[in-house]
Image (tube, rainbow, N blue to C red; front, side):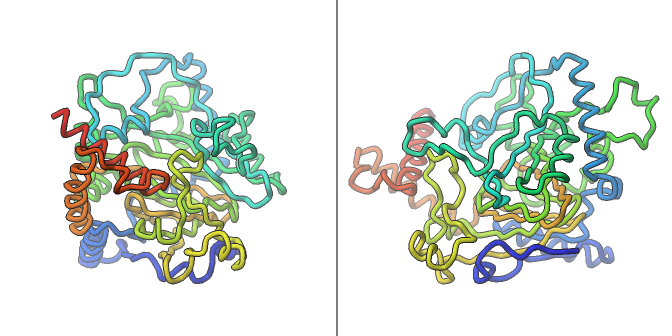
Length: 432
């Protein structure tokens, strides 16, 4: 199969992500598994081959045609039911606040949820690049307003089959699809912080966002061969293995499961997430370049926190050398280096929080699942923890005496983030 060339400077990949095979003898699996756990506990990415997470049914059947039949039929079923659902799970902002020490999480009032639809994005300028623009930050007239985003949502494409048709037929423009398949809900009367920190168990599993049947008929009257995404996830995902993996890492439970579908040579530029992620490839291949967060301010030039492209790197990895030297002079081999791997069907990639991810889909039908995981009881690495304690003591004193302007340049991204973090810690200490 044709493999697109890497869409990044040749020098940027300084090696491969540590890879561990889990498909050998029982003895070798145990040995490789322990080595993988040790690597991940150090806050480093891990590439797992022979991973038992996904069963053969998912790996062999989840084509665009199969997903079109399964997801579209499920959407019609939920539409027939009137779309009446429980109140939504906690938002990303609520979850992030809880993991930083936010307060109580109560029950979510019942309200009518929108009918299931797909989130389809189109790359408009022919470069086949996709950016997740934060609409709430793209305010008209603001300093960071983006008038013509490089990729835009296609509001008229509401079904998976319509997305699949666009993916096959369009030549000048390219599309991608993201859909939430599972999402965790916080039980009534439970503290959000405690729920997010809880270990992964059957009781803390995320709920399905799709019905477990893809038609109005009872499950027992349906053929086992009929497409059903929820049934596949329940029966063909090795949840006990996932429970064990997360417990070994002292991580919390899965907060949500996202389905990603892309096409050949689609690029998802360098960006970091605020939580650990386990990515498992279902169909096609994806090339991942992972860059440690220690390089964030030494050469990656992250966007300001109030920019619609917050958490992305400003650097265009495909720009020529002269442009890079003029616009991002610190982006060079001396300051930035990453690790690369190509994820194939059945393999998994563990990405620690705040690692920058530069992903390139390599095949015409690329399907993968992204499982975002709560931090749980896991501590940071020893060096990071010690540095954080020393810094917190110092900056709490600075804030207490109103000396921020003497120590921090709040006009910079680093300064703004530091002062907001310390203020949050100070408020938490005062409230307790």
